[in-house]
Image (cartoon, rainbow, N blue to C red; front, side, top):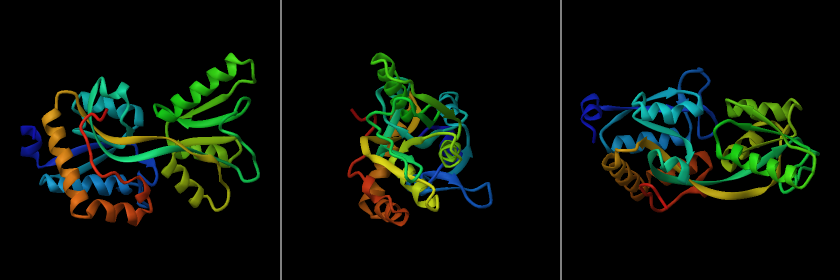
Length: 247
């Protein structure tokens, strides 16, 4: 464990608190809650550490970790090869991608040319939509209008308010949005492109990453991990073994 973290007795955590049910603000507008939050609090407890959650823009979290503004980034980060080039990650969950539309619409994720799609900046969902837009352009079909938002909640609201035809996010986030929408959202297509979630640490902190990996293994073994996921209804993404920089 880095000496400064050991002496502080806590981890300063950067998170985008707009991504329900993973990490979002409680009704007081200040407290960060979600299954991601509860899992990492349990991980930190195994290390004898408290957590201090600091909401931030999603795109600011990794730079904040690299500059030591945050000790760790916990914000549903996909464990991509691109991210592992600049930071060290520890996997702890698995999720796919899914779309939501207004009820009665018929959007085909396989052919969304000519549609307006809402997505959060800096996410793998944005990469997904941009690839689809290039394919539309290459085949001469109507272009996709990509509406980018800093907060996932705003991307979701864009569909409800008819500014966008569909939103794209992690499957658990889309499912939660549909459930909470009161019938104003519906699924468009099924889940695809399953990927691992990972905690983000500075590139040189591989030893601390190994300690976090061991702590995740411990909460899996003692049942805490499964209990938290089940409470939030997201146990389908449970994994059996975490890893540092998974291949």
